[in-house]
Each structure stands twice: as structure tokens, then as C-alpha cells.
Image 1 (cartoon, helix red, strand yellow):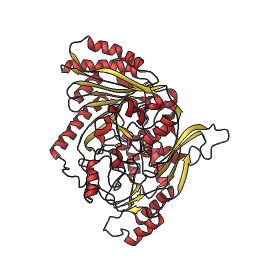
Image 2 (cartoon, rainbow, N blue to C red; image 1 turned 30 degrees about the vertical axis):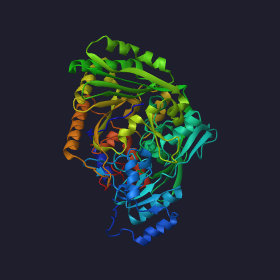
Image 3 (cartoon, rainbow, N blue to C red; image 1 turned 120 degrees about the vertical axis):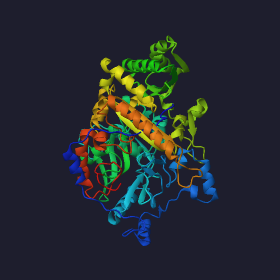
Image 4 (spheres, helix red, strand yellow; image 1 turned 135 degrees about the vertical axis):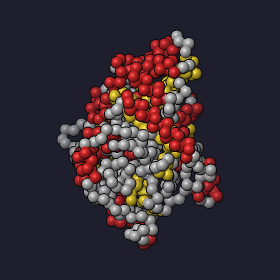
Length: 588
């Protein structure tokens, strides 16, 4: 269950055609007002908004700056992702060196309905106030906070509703209903999995980290542990409710406003509206889910290169299929760390699949097995069952231990290092399947080992869809995500991070020298990977804040269509996020 342990950094991608970029910059500006500046809403105007939304408007403040009781609780819960998510003033990512720091918004609306959200959008448009949205608060780009903004905080909009036979609004006669789940924008993936899998006996494609918000993940594309079998979350979206820039509440799907609907499927959160509810198809549940992990050390650069080449060949021949997901990590000190998951097979079959690779390693004295490759499996409906893990494998999870917390809430122990992390550098790239060919495999292995000499490299094989079944490929092709993902065998990630840096946190400090070295190492590793994959795209939800030519990197040939939809539905650019569609030249 040990998932991501790295961060990500700089990406320099080929230029878009000049005509597209010039056209993008022609969008009219939305001149925003700032707290204390001319045009900032008066206290009376904020109070009028507060009355309209039933008293759910407040001025958020860091709990580390509160009274003694509040500070003590915050310090005790600093490692609890659920506590952080419950604070309107905090975000799960606490900042990015040289880019942004997590600071509370000027005002926060604890929205409970789409009508609340619509009121906030109308207010922001009328007064030219920056609007930000937070569900899970995991944004690496800092899009869910801003000291000059009105925060729409959707945490309370967390209803989960299962459907045996869902039909989108306005569906044509004869449209077959599908099993599905509707999720409020404030729900986390653990809420979805608990309802759909633990209690419902089905599967919904979501994120691997249990505290990630459902809306942000799906609109960003949405890759999880089993995406190699079930596609992206975006590709499973059947319908969405959202508030557009005109303050209207719309229900969109393939039949109603299909352009808006398509743009929500991977076009990035906060680009064309505020999503308030999503409906995703659910799938038959496999018999079993499981994980396999281990660690092997090489005694020299040459043996590490040989190990890397062999595991890539083995992956191509045995693992590049819908059964397997998650990570192969290549470290700066010449270790291969395997942290993979599987579906539809049992523990014995998983270990048998890896037996030839284990035999190859054991036959060579250049390698030391630090942790033998071992598998665990469970009946699939227990994979996110907190009660089951408390009884049978408590070492794998960290429950929300606060009094009165939902008993279903936990995070995987391997995800704890992401709680409050402060990013120094981070980057991702989809690696095309051509790199797995015999004539390219040695060069790929060399690129990975040389990159790992600067900063450890992770290959997230579930976040590339090469090897996925035809239905998953077809559904994912009909999304706004960069089409490069369809031919990518993995998403490569490199990165570096530091301790939390929240406002008022005692001892919080960013060592600029350490951060700069970390960012430099990530950039050096990334440049080496880019030599092997010069046209690689990047996963928008896990990408470099300083991404060069981000339009092409995130969306490729889909960007022009996304930009046209943005202009149609948000011509004034009420919604602007960093490196979002149509954000060129805007103050995001």
C-alpha cells in the first residue's frame, strides 16, 4: 500500500503553434480588486452576501494563530489529513518554493448547496473579486487558497448516493441506464469507496490517496491505482452539476451542454465553473485487490543499469496490462523499490507472476534483497474497509482518531508524507510505449538510472493507459486529457519536498538553500528524462508549477477546443487559475 513518496519539478515542452498562443492571449482581462484597494467590497456588501447564504460566510484564520486551545489542537493534529481538510484556512499542500504559500482567503463560504455557490459566483463577478474553490485542498498549484480571494469551500457538500440504473438528464429514448454514484463536490474518495465498494459491492474509479476531493481529481483527469483497468475518473463521468460564470446552476452531460460536459472531463478544475455534484459510472467489483512490495539494491552503477533494464523488460512482458498498477521507484542510491497493486488475481498468482524476475535477481551476486517481494490480497470489497484493516492489518492505515470522526476515514500509511508537504520541485511526464521496444529499452534504462543519480524517479504505471483494455481506451479518448496518455506506459515523476510551512506554525521555516538544491536536482533529473522522451506530456494534477508551454503539456491537441469553450462560457474570465485554460496573461 506504499504509494507516492516523491514530488515533481520542471518541464520544458515544444511550443504550441504561435497562432494558438497569440489567440489565447487575446482574451479580455478580468481586472480583480484586492483587499483594502479601490473597489474592494464594503463590510455592508459582505454582510449582504452572508445573509444570502444563510450566515455561512466567515473570515478564515490559521488555527496555529488561534487561542491556546485552538493552537494546541492544531499542533496535535498536524499529521491528520482529515483535520487539515476540515480547516477552511489550511490546504493539504502548504506551498511551493518560489511560487506560492498556503495562506487563508480573505473570506470563506462554507457552501451547503449549489445555490450557495451561485450566490458566491454572482458576488465575485459583480465585484471583480478573485474566486477560489477548495474541496480536498490537495492542489499542488495553489489553486485552492489565496489571501486576496473569496473561497468557496465545498467540504459540507459531501452527500453520496448510489444508483442501480442511472439515466443522464435529457438522455435520448432507448438509452440504457447504468449503475452509478452521485457525489457532492466536497466528498473525498474514501467517502466514495466506503459507499460504493465496502457497502455497495461495486467499484468507482477514483484516486489512490483517500483524502483527495472527488471533484478536483475528476476534472483534472483523475488517475488512481486501478486506472490501467478502469480508465480515468474523467472517462467515467456521466453527468455533472456546476455553476457557470453567469451564476446559473446547470446539469451537463452528453445530451445537455455537451461542450461544457466534455471540458469538465480532464480540462482542469476551476476553468469554466464550480462543480457542485458529479455522477460517475460504477463497475463490477473484481474478486480480489492486493499489493506487492519489495526492495533490491545494486552494488554498482553498471549493475543498477542492468537491474533497471531487466525490470523494464519484465514489466513490458508481464505487467503492462489491466491487472497491475502503481509504482516502480529508482532511487539515487541504486535501489529498486517495488510498490505495486493488482486486481482480479490472488496473492499466489501475483507472486508467481514475479517469480521469473525474482529468480533473475537471486542468480546474480551484484544484488542485495533488502525486502523480499511479498504480496498481500483481500476480498475486493474490503480494500477500503477501515474496520477490516483495524482488525487484520492496522499497520497499513492511519485512521482519523479524533473523537466523533467517521469510523470509515483513514489514510494509507504510505501517504502520510504528503500531509502538509512543502514542494521544492516537482515534474511529471508520460512515457510513450515506443520506449519499451527492444531497440529503445537500453536507452530508457540509461535515462532512468542517470536521472535517478540526481533525484529518485518513480514510474506510476497506472497513470499511463498503454496496455489498458479497449473500453477504457475508448472512454479515455473522449476526454479533454492530453491524448498522449493513451499511448503512455507510465507517468514518470520526480520531486523533492520539505516540512509543512503553515502560517503561524511554530518552527515553520523554509531553508532556501536546501529547497533550491532540491529543485535543481529535480530539474536535472527531469532534463535527463526529457532527452529520452522529448515530446512527453504532463498530468495537469501532478505537474510543475513553472511548466513551460503548459497548454501543450497538459492538453495537447485538445487545448484549442478547450479554449473555445472557455471563451463561450466565461468570456470575462471570472474563473482563472494558475495555468488553467484561458489564463494566459491573467493574474491568477
